[in-house]
Image (tube, rainbow, N blue to C red):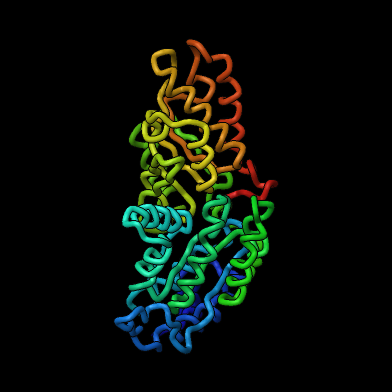
Length: 364
């Protein structure tokens, strides 16, 4: 079987990718994990709670961090796709934490004393390798859970490979009660090799820089153009992302590699508020947003939600790819709120610039 370095070299020779020394430097660490996992015998679980006894010779995982658009997720996918073991799982970290919360809510209904215990055991039962994309901690509830959860996963012999835009020491920085979160950082650095991907190349920026990102009218031609952009950005099959906000669920219909895809009706036709749009902006690096209609007094509520959504995306420096019925200045030309919409139109124009958000370091 070819090594990851050999596979990478072959892709370069075929012209599929461009060589990047920073990416090449990561491959030996991923190959070491791959070899260890493929050589390990199947995990044995005893009848009396033997799951959480760490097997011998479990390799350290990898915490791969660095600037956005450097190819971290692509490298992780290359590793997972060429790892020949049962029980491997690749998931976005935010989606994983949503699963954990749902599992804990279900466990509480059974009257169990510690709802995290059965959730962790269920998660670890059939998984030997977790590949988490975009680890970040912004929520106090997640911060209080994640340390104990990962400790249980590591005890069970689960190996973790994760990507992040931040060094472990920067996770949940300035967060409420952060001192309670610090043991988790220590666990990460003990169980995982921390590797910074230092590359001058921002591949997602290169894909979109100078390219059209706002399409009008929203017809079949626009959809075909957006389909091409989405395929390039997502890099694989997408799945819905469900965000739980104050007990309510907000769904991004398609999500992968930090990029989400939705239609106007999905996010502005539903009764969502500022908190929902802030959560959406926090979860995404790119939003592909289709079929924005003309706005007027006839759809005033949807127009207000659209303004709030654009404000949230703008402040969070989320890159926007959109199709609409008209140019920004012509989307809302009459009715209550049309004057105030001028600021939204201006922001939509600004967000089309190839360098928008680049200086803030939040480019996708």
